[in-house]
Amino acid sequence: MSGRQTSSPGANGSSEPSTKGADRRVNQSISPVEAELILTVLREVRKGNFSVRMPVAPSGVMARIATEMNDLIELNERNAKNLSGVARVIGAVADGDLFQTMDLELDGRPLEGQFLRTARTVNSMVHQLRSFTSEVTRVAGEVGTDGRLGGQAHVKGAAGVWKDLTDNVNLMAANLTAQVRNIANVTTAVANGDLSKKITVDVRGEILELKNTINTMVDQLNGFASEVTRVAREVGTEGKLGGQAQVRGIGGVWKDLTDSVNFMASNLTAQVRNIAEVTTAVQKGDLSKKITVEVQGEILELKDTINVMVDQLNAFAREVTRVAREVGTEGKLGGQAQVQGVAGVWKDLTDNVNYMAGNLTAQVRNIAEVTTAVAEGDLSKKITVDVRGEILQLKNTINSMVDQLNGFAGEVTRVAREVGTEGKLGGQASVPG
Image (cartoon, rainbow, N blue to C red; front, side, top):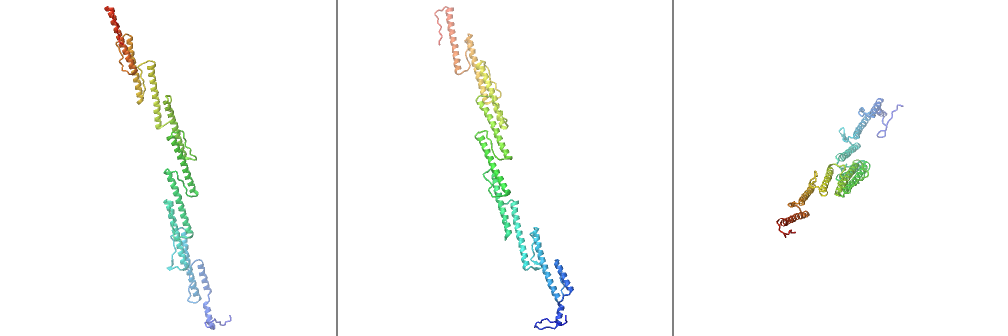
């Protein structure tokens, strides 16, 4: 420089003495030490250390620079704290903690401007997320855990994706409610014996598989019930034996049940037909057949009863035939039918046959005794046995004959005595009748 004094424009446009301008330049200049201090502070701030401060000089440009830098650092520190609060809340949200919020004041001073708006926005977001998760958790707990269907999530003020999420949760809950209630309605009807209902709700995926499975089950139960009812009606009501239940596509316990019903119907058919065969043979007088089918329980008791009946009828028929042959054909009187173990009408029949044989024996023997006596010339005997009907006529005839023979013998004897012994001639025998 030339060393001339320079002046800077004054307020009135005149030039001030060069000495005053030189003083100002000196006051506004920055020394290398001060510049290094500024750089050091800026480096610390760049590293995120907002605790550093510029020492404030009493006056001059460094005083202003220090004040401005310190204000800027303090502002950045407040910004950093605000951002830290935002990061803290967002980090908590990311970790699933929805109970963290931003303070609306910092170091005792209320937030202002964009920071206040940001804090309120973040807090509103957290509140809506908390409301959303609370409602979703409530609906999930009611539907998924407590089994209380029909619940809906209510999130006030939700918009955008939060409203879409809420609507989707409610749609899912409503769909699940309709599906479960339809399934419950059908399965309850099945449990109550009503096989007229089917699942009709629109479903997809695994619920569709469940729907198809239950509807197939209802169809199979209908087929099973229809066939069992048909066989039961044919066998039990209409008496049409030999029927079998035909249920297509069944397996497991339903096939076992169908097989059991068919086995029962087959067994019952064999048993009833065998019993009918034997009883029909008995009715036709054929006592050579017996029930041979394998049975148990009460049917076994019936089998044993009928077979015992056949045995008794055989014994009864044999004995009656023997007595009839002995008395009626061989003339062997005195025979009696011996049938072991008979009771009721069979005992009555046996007793009546024996009574008839006993009566016939007594009657024939009495008649034989009288006729033998007559043949031997003994006219003192008469038939005394109690008889009826044609045997009574025979009894009366023989007794009349004995009386007549007695009268004839008496008259002949009298005439013979008068003529032959007493010499009374002319006598006549008078035999009335």
